[in-house]
Image (cartoon, rainbow, N blue to C red; front, side, top):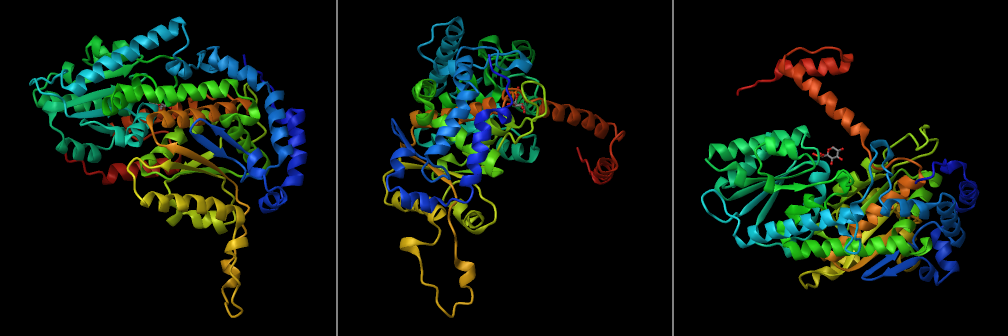
Length: 533
Ligand SMILES: O=P(O)(O)OC[C@H]1O[C@H](O)[C@H](O)[C@@H](O)[C@@H]1O
Protein backbone atom coordinates (compact mmCIF):
# COMPACT_ATOMS: atom_id res chain seq x y z
CA UNK A 1 0.00 0.00 0.00
CA UNK A 2 1.02 3.63 -0.38
CA UNK A 3 3.10 5.48 2.19
CA UNK A 4 1.41 8.57 3.58
CA UNK A 5 4.47 10.70 4.25
CA UNK A 6 4.41 14.43 3.73
CA UNK A 7 6.88 14.95 0.86
CA UNK A 8 7.89 18.38 2.11
CA UNK A 9 9.03 16.78 5.37
CA UNK A 10 11.52 14.41 3.75
CA UNK A 11 15.27 14.84 3.90
CA UNK A 12 15.53 14.81 0.12
CA UNK A 13 12.98 17.63 -0.18
CA UNK A 14 15.19 19.69 2.11
CA UNK A 15 18.18 18.85 -0.08
CA UNK A 16 16.24 19.81 -3.18
CA UNK A 17 15.27 23.13 -1.61
CA UNK A 18 18.91 23.93 -0.80
CA UNK A 19 19.96 22.83 -4.26
CA UNK A 20 17.27 25.07 -5.79
CA UNK A 21 18.89 28.10 -4.14
CA UNK A 22 22.06 27.24 -6.06
CA UNK A 23 20.32 26.47 -9.32
CA UNK A 24 17.77 29.25 -9.56
CA UNK A 25 20.11 31.72 -11.25
CA UNK A 26 22.11 29.22 -13.27
CA UNK A 27 21.64 29.69 -16.99
CA UNK A 28 21.07 26.63 -19.13
CA UNK A 29 23.27 28.23 -21.79
CA UNK A 30 26.18 28.03 -19.32
CA UNK A 31 25.40 24.41 -18.54
CA UNK A 32 25.52 23.61 -22.25
CA UNK A 33 28.78 25.52 -22.69
CA UNK A 34 30.41 23.79 -19.74
CA UNK A 35 29.48 20.33 -20.93
CA UNK A 36 29.37 19.73 -24.65
CA UNK A 37 28.14 16.18 -24.02
CA UNK A 38 25.24 17.24 -21.85
CA UNK A 39 22.77 15.61 -24.23
CA UNK A 40 24.36 12.20 -23.59
CA UNK A 41 23.37 12.34 -19.93
CA UNK A 42 19.99 13.92 -20.30
CA UNK A 43 18.11 12.01 -22.94
CA UNK A 44 16.38 8.66 -23.06
CA UNK A 45 16.26 6.61 -26.23
CA UNK A 46 13.57 3.98 -25.98
CA UNK A 47 12.26 1.99 -28.94
CA UNK A 48 11.00 4.54 -31.51
CA UNK A 49 11.15 7.42 -28.99
CA UNK A 50 13.84 9.93 -28.12
CA UNK A 51 13.05 12.02 -25.08
CA UNK A 52 15.51 14.88 -24.77
CA UNK A 53 15.32 16.53 -21.37
CA UNK A 54 18.69 18.28 -21.55
CA UNK A 55 17.08 21.70 -22.05
CA UNK A 56 16.04 21.88 -18.41
CA UNK A 57 17.42 23.79 -15.46
CA UNK A 58 19.12 20.76 -14.04
CA UNK A 59 22.57 19.29 -13.54
CA UNK A 60 23.74 15.86 -12.37
CA UNK A 61 23.02 16.75 -8.76
CA UNK A 62 19.45 17.82 -9.55
CA UNK A 63 18.64 14.50 -11.19
CA UNK A 64 20.30 12.57 -8.38
CA UNK A 65 18.38 14.50 -5.70
CA UNK A 66 15.09 14.09 -7.53
CA UNK A 67 15.67 10.35 -7.77
CA UNK A 68 16.63 10.30 -4.06
CA UNK A 69 13.29 11.98 -3.35
CA UNK A 70 11.41 9.32 -5.34
CA UNK A 71 13.29 6.64 -3.41
CA UNK A 72 12.70 8.23 -0.04
CA UNK A 73 8.98 8.34 -0.86
CA UNK A 74 9.22 4.62 -1.81
CA UNK A 75 7.97 5.15 -5.33
CA UNK A 76 8.86 1.55 -6.32
CA UNK A 77 6.43 0.33 -3.69
CA UNK A 78 3.76 2.63 -5.13
CA UNK A 79 4.30 1.37 -8.68
CA UNK A 80 4.08 -2.21 -7.46
CA UNK A 81 0.85 -1.45 -5.61
CA UNK A 82 -0.62 0.07 -8.79
CA UNK A 83 0.16 -2.92 -11.01
CA UNK A 84 -0.78 -5.46 -8.33
CA UNK A 85 -4.28 -4.06 -8.12
CA UNK A 86 -4.06 -2.98 -4.48
CA UNK A 87 -6.88 -0.68 -3.34
CA UNK A 88 -4.85 2.47 -3.98
CA UNK A 89 -7.99 4.47 -4.80
CA UNK A 90 -8.62 4.34 -1.06
CA UNK A 91 -11.34 6.96 -0.87
CA UNK A 92 -13.48 4.90 -3.24
CA UNK A 93 -12.08 1.56 -2.04
CA UNK A 94 -11.05 0.53 -5.53
CA UNK A 95 -8.05 -0.82 -7.39
CA UNK A 96 -6.69 1.18 -10.28
CA UNK A 97 -6.14 -1.25 -13.11
CA UNK A 98 -6.23 0.52 -16.44
CA UNK A 99 -2.86 -1.16 -17.06
CA UNK A 100 -4.60 -4.58 -16.87
CA UNK A 101 -6.65 -3.56 -19.93
CA UNK A 102 -3.52 -3.81 -22.06
CA UNK A 103 -1.67 -6.52 -20.18
CA UNK A 104 -1.45 -9.54 -22.46
CA UNK A 105 0.77 -11.52 -20.04
CA UNK A 106 -1.36 -11.36 -16.91
CA UNK A 107 -3.40 -14.49 -16.23
CA UNK A 108 -5.64 -13.33 -13.36
CA UNK A 109 -9.43 -13.58 -13.26
CA UNK A 110 -9.69 -9.88 -14.04
CA UNK A 111 -7.83 -10.33 -17.30
CA UNK A 112 -10.12 -13.18 -18.35
CA UNK A 113 -13.04 -10.75 -18.18
CA UNK A 114 -11.03 -8.15 -20.04
CA UNK A 115 -10.04 -10.61 -22.77
CA UNK A 116 -13.65 -11.67 -23.21
CA UNK A 117 -14.68 -8.03 -23.60
CA UNK A 118 -11.90 -7.34 -26.09
CA UNK A 119 -13.11 -10.33 -28.10
CA UNK A 120 -16.64 -8.92 -28.10
CA UNK A 121 -15.32 -5.53 -29.24
CA UNK A 122 -13.45 -7.26 -32.05
CA UNK A 123 -16.46 -9.28 -33.20
CA UNK A 124 -18.83 -6.33 -33.04
CA UNK A 125 -16.56 -3.81 -34.73
CA UNK A 126 -15.68 -6.31 -37.49
CA UNK A 127 -19.36 -6.91 -38.18
CA UNK A 128 -20.24 -3.21 -38.33
CA UNK A 129 -17.25 -2.40 -40.54
CA UNK A 130 -18.05 -5.25 -42.93
CA UNK A 131 -21.71 -4.23 -43.00
CA UNK A 132 -22.86 -7.50 -41.44
CA UNK A 133 -24.43 -5.86 -38.39
CA UNK A 134 -27.33 -4.10 -40.08
CA UNK A 135 -29.88 -1.40 -39.40
CA UNK A 136 -33.66 -1.63 -39.04
CA UNK A 137 -34.07 -1.33 -42.80
CA UNK A 138 -31.32 -3.91 -43.36
CA UNK A 139 -28.71 -1.39 -44.43
CA UNK A 140 -25.04 -1.25 -43.37
CA UNK A 141 -24.27 1.53 -40.90
CA UNK A 142 -22.45 4.58 -42.23
CA UNK A 143 -22.25 6.84 -39.15
CA UNK A 144 -21.29 6.24 -35.54
CA UNK A 145 -22.28 8.72 -32.83
CA UNK A 146 -20.41 8.43 -29.51
CA UNK A 147 -22.55 9.99 -26.79
CA UNK A 148 -20.49 10.55 -23.63
CA UNK A 149 -18.62 13.19 -21.70
CA UNK A 150 -15.35 13.53 -19.75
CA UNK A 151 -13.43 10.28 -19.90
CA UNK A 152 -16.21 8.74 -21.99
CA UNK A 153 -15.47 11.27 -24.72
CA UNK A 154 -12.06 12.96 -24.53
CA UNK A 155 -9.83 9.89 -24.84
CA UNK A 156 -11.68 8.09 -27.67
CA UNK A 157 -12.29 11.36 -29.54
CA UNK A 158 -8.62 12.29 -29.36
CA UNK A 159 -7.48 8.83 -30.53
CA UNK A 160 -9.97 8.66 -33.42
CA UNK A 161 -8.72 12.06 -34.56
CA UNK A 162 -5.05 11.16 -34.00
CA UNK A 163 -5.37 8.00 -36.07
CA UNK A 164 -7.25 9.75 -38.85
CA UNK A 165 -4.92 8.24 -41.43
CA UNK A 166 -5.97 4.74 -40.40
CA UNK A 167 -9.69 5.34 -40.60
CA UNK A 168 -12.13 3.29 -42.64
CA UNK A 169 -15.37 4.34 -44.36
CA UNK A 170 -17.35 4.84 -41.13
CA UNK A 171 -17.92 8.45 -40.14
CA UNK A 172 -17.54 8.89 -36.40
CA UNK A 173 -19.06 11.81 -34.46
CA UNK A 174 -18.73 12.74 -30.81
CA UNK A 175 -21.53 14.36 -28.85
CA UNK A 176 -20.64 15.43 -25.35
CA UNK A 177 -22.05 18.82 -24.42
CA UNK A 178 -25.70 19.55 -23.81
CA UNK A 179 -25.70 22.17 -26.50
CA UNK A 180 -28.73 21.62 -28.67
CA UNK A 181 -27.52 24.09 -31.29
CA UNK A 182 -24.53 21.84 -31.98
CA UNK A 183 -26.51 18.59 -31.88
CA UNK A 184 -29.17 19.97 -34.20
CA UNK A 185 -26.50 20.73 -36.78
CA UNK A 186 -25.25 17.14 -36.58
CA UNK A 187 -28.74 15.63 -36.77
CA UNK A 188 -29.34 17.44 -40.04
CA UNK A 189 -26.35 15.64 -41.54
CA UNK A 190 -27.22 12.18 -40.25
CA UNK A 191 -29.43 9.57 -41.82
CA UNK A 192 -31.30 7.82 -38.97
CA UNK A 193 -31.55 4.65 -41.08
CA UNK A 194 -27.78 4.17 -41.06
CA UNK A 195 -26.73 5.76 -37.76
CA UNK A 196 -25.43 3.72 -34.86
CA UNK A 197 -25.39 5.45 -31.46
CA UNK A 198 -23.03 4.37 -28.67
CA UNK A 199 -24.01 5.64 -25.24
CA UNK A 200 -20.80 5.61 -23.22
CA UNK A 201 -21.17 6.26 -19.52
CA UNK A 202 -19.40 4.38 -16.78
CA UNK A 203 -22.13 5.36 -14.31
CA UNK A 204 -25.03 5.69 -16.77
CA UNK A 205 -26.24 8.54 -14.60
CA UNK A 206 -24.27 11.49 -16.00
CA UNK A 207 -26.95 14.05 -16.77
CA UNK A 208 -25.46 15.42 -20.00
CA UNK A 209 -25.00 11.95 -21.46
CA UNK A 210 -28.45 10.69 -20.49
CA UNK A 211 -30.16 13.84 -21.83
CA UNK A 212 -28.30 13.46 -25.11
CA UNK A 213 -28.99 9.73 -25.26
CA UNK A 214 -32.72 10.40 -24.81
CA UNK A 215 -32.58 12.97 -27.57
CA UNK A 216 -31.01 10.47 -29.98
CA UNK A 217 -33.42 7.74 -28.89
CA UNK A 218 -36.42 9.98 -29.61
CA UNK A 219 -34.93 11.00 -32.93
CA UNK A 220 -34.52 7.34 -33.94
CA UNK A 221 -38.05 6.49 -32.77
CA UNK A 222 -39.48 9.47 -34.65
CA UNK A 223 -37.84 8.07 -37.78
CA UNK A 224 -39.24 4.59 -37.10
CA UNK A 225 -35.93 2.96 -36.29
CA UNK A 226 -35.56 0.02 -33.91
CA UNK A 227 -33.73 1.48 -30.91
CA UNK A 228 -32.47 -1.93 -29.79
CA UNK A 229 -30.51 -2.22 -33.03
CA UNK A 230 -29.39 1.38 -33.34
CA UNK A 231 -28.22 2.08 -29.79
CA UNK A 232 -25.51 0.20 -27.94
CA UNK A 233 -23.95 1.08 -24.58
CA UNK A 234 -20.73 0.90 -22.60
CA UNK A 235 -21.28 1.02 -18.85
CA UNK A 236 -20.79 -0.58 -15.44
CA UNK A 237 -24.49 0.01 -14.83
CA UNK A 238 -26.16 -2.81 -16.73
CA UNK A 239 -29.56 -2.28 -15.13
CA UNK A 240 -29.88 1.37 -16.08
CA UNK A 241 -28.63 0.67 -19.60
CA UNK A 242 -31.21 -2.08 -20.05
CA UNK A 243 -33.94 0.08 -18.56
CA UNK A 244 -33.01 2.63 -21.23
CA UNK A 245 -33.92 0.07 -23.90
CA UNK A 246 -30.55 -1.34 -24.83
CA UNK A 247 -30.33 -5.09 -25.38
CA UNK A 248 -28.10 -6.94 -22.95
CA UNK A 249 -25.91 -8.34 -25.74
CA UNK A 250 -25.32 -4.77 -26.90
CA UNK A 251 -24.06 -3.56 -23.52
CA UNK A 252 -20.27 -3.65 -23.19
CA UNK A 253 -18.95 -3.75 -19.64
CA UNK A 254 -16.80 -1.24 -17.79
CA UNK A 255 -15.28 -1.85 -14.41
CA UNK A 256 -14.94 0.11 -11.20
CA UNK A 257 -11.20 -0.47 -11.29
CA UNK A 258 -10.88 1.71 -14.39
CA UNK A 259 -11.22 5.46 -13.90
CA UNK A 260 -13.11 7.34 -16.61
CA UNK A 261 -10.07 9.39 -17.64
CA UNK A 262 -8.00 6.20 -18.02
CA UNK A 263 -10.67 4.20 -19.83
CA UNK A 264 -10.01 4.59 -23.55
CA UNK A 265 -8.29 1.17 -23.47
CA UNK A 266 -11.54 -0.51 -22.45
CA UNK A 267 -14.85 -0.82 -24.31
CA UNK A 268 -15.05 2.96 -23.88
CA UNK A 269 -12.72 2.89 -26.87
CA UNK A 270 -15.17 0.95 -29.03
CA UNK A 271 -15.50 4.01 -31.29
CA UNK A 272 -11.76 3.67 -31.90
CA UNK A 273 -12.08 -0.01 -32.90
CA UNK A 274 -15.00 0.91 -35.17
CA UNK A 275 -13.17 3.83 -36.79
CA UNK A 276 -9.78 2.26 -37.42
CA UNK A 277 -10.50 -1.46 -37.12
CA UNK A 278 -9.79 -3.78 -34.21
CA UNK A 279 -6.21 -4.62 -35.32
CA UNK A 280 -5.16 -0.98 -34.95
CA UNK A 281 -6.98 -0.70 -31.61
CA UNK A 282 -4.95 -3.71 -30.49
CA UNK A 283 -1.73 -2.00 -31.65
CA UNK A 284 -2.65 1.01 -29.52
CA UNK A 285 -2.96 -1.31 -26.51
CA UNK A 286 0.34 -3.01 -27.37
CA UNK A 287 2.11 0.35 -27.44
CA UNK A 288 0.76 1.20 -23.99
CA UNK A 289 1.70 -2.25 -22.69
CA UNK A 290 5.31 -1.78 -23.76
CA UNK A 291 5.43 1.56 -21.93
CA UNK A 292 3.96 -0.16 -18.84
CA UNK A 293 6.88 -2.58 -18.93
CA UNK A 294 9.39 0.26 -19.29
CA UNK A 295 7.75 2.12 -16.39
CA UNK A 296 7.82 -0.97 -14.14
CA UNK A 297 11.36 -2.07 -14.93
CA UNK A 298 13.56 0.88 -15.82
CA UNK A 299 15.70 2.61 -13.20
CA UNK A 300 14.24 5.98 -12.25
CA UNK A 301 16.91 8.11 -13.93
CA UNK A 302 16.18 6.42 -17.28
CA UNK A 303 12.47 5.97 -16.79
CA UNK A 304 10.57 8.34 -19.11
CA UNK A 305 7.40 8.92 -17.03
CA UNK A 306 9.39 9.13 -13.79
CA UNK A 307 11.90 11.65 -15.16
CA UNK A 308 9.11 13.78 -16.63
CA UNK A 309 7.17 13.71 -13.36
CA UNK A 310 10.25 14.65 -11.33
CA UNK A 311 11.09 17.56 -13.63
CA UNK A 312 7.55 18.80 -13.36
CA UNK A 313 7.78 18.61 -9.55
CA UNK A 314 11.13 20.45 -9.67
CA UNK A 315 9.47 23.37 -11.49
CA UNK A 316 6.11 23.25 -9.72
CA UNK A 317 7.36 22.92 -6.16
CA UNK A 318 10.74 24.65 -6.17
CA UNK A 319 10.79 27.20 -8.99
CA UNK A 320 7.09 27.96 -8.48
CA UNK A 321 6.23 27.72 -12.20
CA UNK A 322 2.48 27.29 -12.26
CA UNK A 323 1.66 25.85 -15.66
CA UNK A 324 3.14 23.60 -18.26
CA UNK A 325 2.31 23.39 -21.89
CA UNK A 326 2.23 20.61 -24.46
CA UNK A 327 2.80 21.43 -28.12
CA UNK A 328 2.34 18.57 -30.60
CA UNK A 329 3.62 19.33 -34.09
CA UNK A 330 0.86 17.32 -35.76
CA UNK A 331 -2.64 18.51 -36.58
CA UNK A 332 -3.94 15.05 -35.79
CA UNK A 333 -3.09 15.71 -32.12
CA UNK A 334 -5.28 18.81 -31.87
CA UNK A 335 -7.40 17.16 -29.16
CA UNK A 336 -4.42 15.88 -27.19
CA UNK A 337 -4.15 18.85 -24.77
CA UNK A 338 -7.85 18.61 -23.85
CA UNK A 339 -7.52 14.90 -23.16
CA UNK A 340 -4.38 15.49 -21.13
CA UNK A 341 -6.06 18.18 -19.07
CA UNK A 342 -8.58 15.69 -17.73
CA UNK A 343 -5.94 13.04 -17.07
CA UNK A 344 -3.69 15.37 -15.13
CA UNK A 345 -5.90 18.05 -13.63
CA UNK A 346 -8.82 15.87 -12.57
CA UNK A 347 -6.34 13.42 -11.08
CA UNK A 348 -4.03 15.76 -9.22
CA UNK A 349 -6.19 18.81 -8.51
CA UNK A 350 -6.35 17.87 -4.81
CA UNK A 351 -5.45 19.78 -1.64
CA UNK A 352 -5.83 17.13 1.08
CA UNK A 353 -3.08 14.56 1.48
CA UNK A 354 -3.39 10.82 2.00
CA UNK A 355 -3.17 11.29 5.75
CA UNK A 356 -6.22 13.61 5.61
CA UNK A 357 -4.21 16.81 6.17
CA UNK A 358 -4.31 19.94 4.02
CA UNK A 359 -1.16 19.98 1.91
CA UNK A 360 1.46 22.67 2.60
CA UNK A 361 2.97 22.55 -0.89
CA UNK A 362 1.69 22.92 -4.44
CA UNK A 363 0.03 19.94 -6.17
CA UNK A 364 -1.61 19.56 -9.62
CA UNK A 365 0.08 21.51 -12.35
CA UNK A 366 -2.05 23.40 -14.83
CA UNK A 367 -1.67 21.81 -18.25
CA UNK A 368 -2.62 23.43 -21.50
CA UNK A 369 -1.54 23.40 -25.10
CA UNK A 370 -2.15 23.72 -28.79
CA UNK A 371 -0.61 22.30 -31.93
CA UNK A 372 2.52 23.76 -33.53
CA UNK A 373 3.07 25.78 -35.57
CA UNK A 374 -0.34 27.43 -34.89
CA UNK A 375 0.55 28.07 -31.26
CA UNK A 376 3.73 29.89 -32.33
CA UNK A 377 1.54 32.48 -34.01
CA UNK A 378 -0.76 32.75 -31.02
CA UNK A 379 0.98 32.64 -27.65
CA UNK A 380 4.69 31.84 -28.08
CA UNK A 381 5.50 35.55 -27.74
CA UNK A 382 4.83 35.19 -24.01
CA UNK A 383 7.14 32.16 -23.82
CA UNK A 384 9.98 34.05 -25.44
CA UNK A 385 9.70 37.46 -23.85
CA UNK A 386 7.06 37.33 -21.13
CA UNK A 387 7.73 37.46 -17.39
CA UNK A 388 6.38 33.97 -16.75
CA UNK A 389 8.31 30.79 -17.34
CA UNK A 390 6.26 27.98 -18.84
CA UNK A 391 8.05 24.65 -19.35
CA UNK A 392 7.15 23.14 -22.72
CA UNK A 393 6.77 19.56 -23.96
CA UNK A 394 7.45 19.57 -27.70
CA UNK A 395 6.11 16.47 -29.45
CA UNK A 396 7.21 15.85 -33.03
CA UNK A 397 7.38 12.99 -35.52
CA UNK A 398 10.36 12.19 -37.73
CA UNK A 399 8.25 10.81 -40.56
CA UNK A 400 4.86 12.03 -41.73
CA UNK A 401 2.12 9.64 -42.78
CA UNK A 402 2.05 11.12 -46.27
CA UNK A 403 5.51 11.95 -47.57
CA UNK A 404 6.01 15.63 -48.35
CA UNK A 405 8.76 18.26 -48.11
CA UNK A 406 6.32 20.30 -46.09
CA UNK A 407 7.07 18.05 -43.13
CA UNK A 408 10.65 19.34 -43.00
CA UNK A 409 9.37 22.90 -42.68
CA UNK A 410 7.00 21.87 -39.90
CA UNK A 411 9.83 20.11 -38.08
CA UNK A 412 12.26 22.96 -38.71
CA UNK A 413 9.88 25.07 -36.63
CA UNK A 414 9.75 22.36 -33.99
CA UNK A 415 13.55 22.36 -33.60
CA UNK A 416 13.84 26.13 -33.88
CA UNK A 417 11.45 26.89 -31.05
CA UNK A 418 13.11 24.78 -28.37
CA UNK A 419 16.52 26.07 -29.48
CA UNK A 420 15.35 29.68 -29.28
CA UNK A 421 13.79 29.10 -25.87
CA UNK A 422 17.09 27.69 -24.66
CA UNK A 423 19.54 30.12 -26.20
CA UNK A 424 17.63 33.33 -26.65
CA UNK A 425 19.13 35.62 -29.25
CA UNK A 426 22.79 34.72 -28.90
CA UNK A 427 25.43 32.66 -30.62
CA UNK A 428 24.81 31.95 -34.28
CA UNK A 429 21.67 34.01 -34.24
CA UNK A 430 22.86 37.16 -32.52
CA UNK A 431 22.18 40.25 -34.54
CA UNK A 432 24.46 43.21 -34.02
CA UNK A 433 22.06 45.86 -32.74
CA UNK A 434 21.98 48.87 -35.03
CA UNK A 435 23.22 51.88 -33.14
CA UNK A 436 20.33 54.00 -34.25
CA UNK A 437 17.68 51.34 -33.50
CA UNK A 438 15.56 52.92 -30.77
CA UNK A 439 13.74 49.62 -30.32
CA UNK A 440 16.85 47.51 -29.72
CA UNK A 441 15.93 47.04 -26.08
CA UNK A 442 12.66 45.36 -27.06
CA UNK A 443 14.29 42.97 -29.45
CA UNK A 444 16.51 41.02 -27.11
CA UNK A 445 15.51 37.77 -25.64
CA UNK A 446 17.28 35.95 -22.96
CA UNK A 447 16.41 32.32 -23.41
CA UNK A 448 16.93 29.97 -20.46
CA UNK A 449 13.34 28.69 -20.88
CA UNK A 450 13.04 24.95 -20.24
CA UNK A 451 11.55 22.32 -22.51
CA UNK A 452 11.40 18.58 -23.12
CA UNK A 453 11.46 17.25 -26.66
CA UNK A 454 9.78 14.04 -27.76
CA UNK A 455 11.12 12.96 -31.13
CA UNK A 456 9.05 9.99 -32.26
CA UNK A 457 9.56 8.00 -35.44
CA UNK A 458 5.99 8.23 -36.69
CA UNK A 459 2.46 8.74 -35.41
CA UNK A 460 1.08 5.18 -35.44
CA UNK A 461 -1.44 3.38 -33.22
CA UNK A 462 1.46 1.81 -31.34
CA UNK A 463 3.48 4.99 -30.79
CA UNK A 464 0.30 6.82 -29.75
CA UNK A 465 -0.37 4.10 -27.16
CA UNK A 466 3.14 4.60 -25.80
CA UNK A 467 2.76 8.37 -25.65
CA UNK A 468 -0.55 8.23 -23.79
CA UNK A 469 0.79 5.70 -21.29
CA UNK A 470 3.79 7.98 -20.63
CA UNK A 471 1.50 10.81 -19.56
CA UNK A 472 -0.78 8.49 -17.56
CA UNK A 473 2.20 7.24 -15.58
CA UNK A 474 3.69 10.71 -15.22
CA UNK A 475 0.39 11.75 -13.63
CA UNK A 476 0.43 8.73 -11.33
CA UNK A 477 3.99 9.41 -10.18
CA UNK A 478 3.23 13.05 -9.41
CA UNK A 479 0.08 12.25 -7.44
CA UNK A 480 1.94 9.53 -5.56
CA UNK A 481 4.87 11.80 -4.67
CA UNK A 482 2.55 14.64 -3.66
CA UNK A 483 0.90 12.18 -1.29
CA UNK A 484 -2.58 12.80 -2.68
CA UNK A 485 -5.31 10.53 -4.02
CA UNK A 486 -5.24 10.80 -7.81
CA UNK A 487 -8.14 8.55 -8.66
CA UNK A 488 -11.23 10.16 -7.18
CA UNK A 489 -12.97 13.37 -8.28
CA UNK A 490 -15.28 14.52 -5.51
CA UNK A 491 -15.05 18.15 -6.61
CA UNK A 492 -16.65 17.41 -9.98
CA UNK A 493 -19.39 15.39 -8.36
CA UNK A 494 -20.42 18.29 -6.10
CA UNK A 495 -20.70 20.57 -9.14
CA UNK A 496 -23.04 18.07 -10.81
CA UNK A 497 -25.41 18.07 -7.80
CA UNK A 498 -25.56 21.86 -7.63
CA UNK A 499 -26.51 22.09 -11.30
CA UNK A 500 -29.38 19.67 -10.76
CA UNK A 501 -30.98 21.76 -8.03
CA UNK A 502 -30.52 25.02 -10.00
CA UNK A 503 -32.16 23.42 -13.01
CA UNK A 504 -35.21 22.60 -10.84
CA UNK A 505 -35.36 26.20 -9.65
CA UNK A 506 -35.26 27.42 -13.26
CA UNK A 507 -38.04 25.03 -14.23
CA UNK A 508 -40.16 26.08 -11.26
CA UNK A 509 -39.23 29.72 -11.81
CA UNK A 510 -38.41 29.94 -8.14
CA UNK A 511 -34.91 31.09 -7.23
CA UNK A 512 -33.93 30.59 -3.61
CA UNK A 513 -31.04 30.40 -1.19
CA UNK A 514 -28.15 31.73 -3.31
CA UNK A 515 -25.64 34.49 -2.80
CA UNK A 516 -26.71 37.87 -4.21
CA UNK A 517 -24.57 37.53 -7.35
CA UNK A 518 -25.97 34.13 -8.33
CA UNK A 519 -29.52 35.25 -7.48
CA UNK A 520 -29.08 38.35 -9.65
CA UNK A 521 -27.79 36.31 -12.58
CA UNK A 522 -30.53 33.67 -12.31
CA UNK A 523 -33.28 36.28 -12.05
CA UNK A 524 -32.02 38.00 -15.17
CA UNK A 525 -31.76 34.68 -16.95
CA UNK A 526 -35.42 33.93 -16.16
CA UNK A 527 -36.53 37.46 -17.01
CA UNK A 528 -35.00 37.50 -20.49
CA UNK A 529 -35.34 33.84 -21.40
CA UNK A 530 -37.73 33.64 -24.34
CA UNK A 531 -38.73 30.01 -24.49
CA UNK A 532 -40.58 29.32 -27.68
CA UNK A 533 -40.96 25.56 -27.43
O1 LIG B 1 -18.66 7.90 -17.82
P1 LIG B 1 -19.52 8.70 -16.92
O2 LIG B 1 -19.93 7.94 -15.69
O3 LIG B 1 -20.72 9.23 -17.66
O4 LIG B 1 -18.67 9.91 -16.39
C1 LIG B 1 -18.22 10.93 -17.23
C2 LIG B 1 -17.33 11.89 -16.44
O5 LIG B 1 -18.10 12.37 -15.35
C3 LIG B 1 -17.45 13.27 -14.46
O6 LIG B 1 -17.19 14.48 -15.08
C4 LIG B 1 -16.18 12.69 -13.93
O7 LIG B 1 -15.49 13.65 -13.18
C5 LIG B 1 -15.30 12.19 -15.06
O8 LIG B 1 -14.17 11.54 -14.53
C6 LIG B 1 -16.06 11.23 -15.93
O9 LIG B 1 -15.22 10.82 -16.97
